[in-house]
View 1: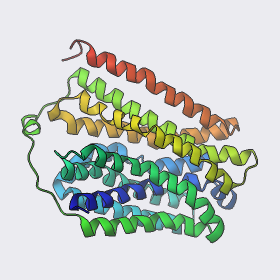
View 2: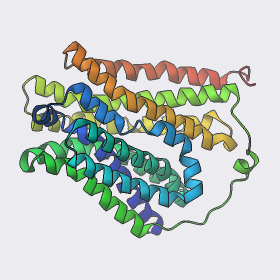
View 3: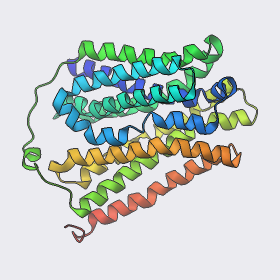
View 4: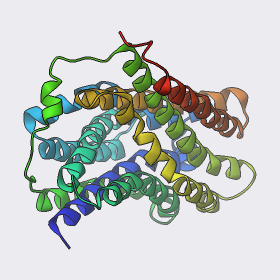
Length: 343
């Protein structure tokens, strides 16, 4: 295996561990409610807290990577994920668990901001770049799938403590693997970016970046909501929690099947702005995504509590997904229009 693919394997495992840790709370909804007395709103808050720090971190990620290095930022991110996971496992109250969850989320955001860059640095100008990036992107839903399918039976067989600690262990393994295989590739400066120092978005560019970030945020909110709330619906209808979690694999397969749409959406911020502004465009793009992913799970939890209907979050997810279509159309209309929005 070439060095580039060894490094990609380490980066992919790191991103998989992030998806696994993120989904560990929704995957254990039933025992967390029955054994620890948490409400659906509390479950949603713990879930969303993992990504909420990304609003600020996505905008600052590029600066941090430049100052301390991308690999150091990624490794520190994994360290915080491991520490936050252990702290959440040890926590004796919801408030303390929420604080540790936020710490793990900060580490996850720092990691995620760097992963795509680190992979692109190794595969740039190679014919297998699309394949490499596709593998990296797929690791997030793969981690979510792994959590949904493995953690409920682990909790039943070995106890909640083991199930809550396992994501931190996976993060620590990812940290060790990435630290052992990573080495920086030869870097080449981008003349386009260098010429863009001091440049800023036109009104048209900012609108397109904002729309693209909104599409990515809504798309992920809908997908995660469908995966997270389907087991609860099945359990409400009398299916035991392990069978309900296993049944959600059909949702997961559907998510992976529509995965190519994610790759297309990821190209939108690149199309939205000039090459010298793409770094800032990605920062705004991910800030919108993290904001939506941080707030939406809590809102869906309140919706579930307020309506008393197990189907309410799933209906909301369907509406959210449909909202992506008019936004996509608006993006294309503005993109093809004459530069009437340009400052």
